[in-house]
Length: 70
Image 1 (spheres, rainbow, N blue to C red):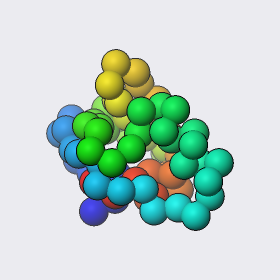
Image 2: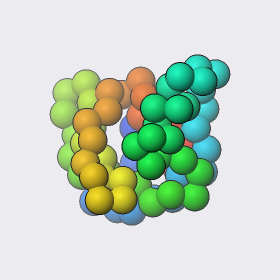
Image 3: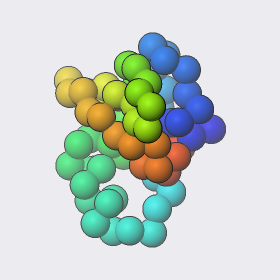
Image 4: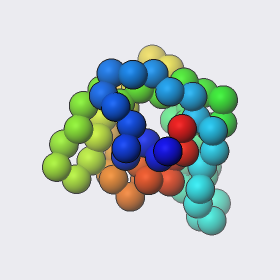
C-alpha cells in the first residue's frame, strides 16, 4: 500500500521508496523518510497530505505520497 491510500492518524512503517530519481531519494532521506522509519498521515488536502516523520511535519504532494510504500 502506498502512503496516498493510508488512513489518517495511523502510524505506518515505511517499507521502501519507489522512485528512480536519486535527487528525490536524497531529499526524502534528508527528511528522515527511509525504509524502517515510522510515518503518520496527519491530514489530507486536495492535492497533498501532511505527514509526520520523527519530530517534523511535512506537506507532500500526492505523486510523492504514491512513491512511499508502507
